[in-house]
Length: 121
Image (cartoon, rainbow, N blue to C red; front, side, top):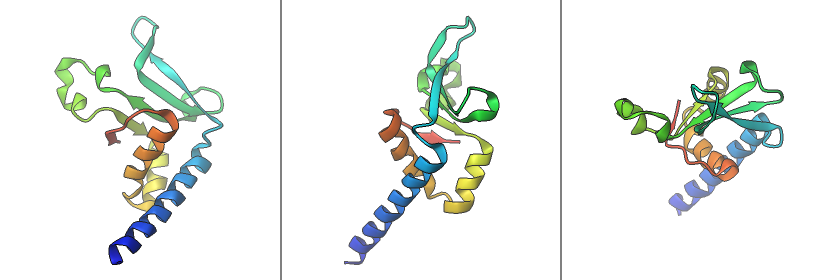
């Protein structure tokens, strides 16, 4: 009975945190673009997510696949795909939810963008 109650509480908490992500990142207002390789071609292995017009100041997070890293960077390949969250957003989420938001963010990200996440930095 206690485990069931804990699961129900976690589910409610998880839904609350996902709703917070929807509000803060506004999935209807959140856009993404491919990063570019050294030749200016779209790089399918790195996406940049931003709110409003594209500029560095509007970037909220980036998604990087394991294929983005060459063989010499195996330490990054092993923890990819990675989402890099802007420091301000990460600090806000940590102050509100501790580290509990990270696994919930991974689910939310998969649900909204159909991209897996292994690591959040």
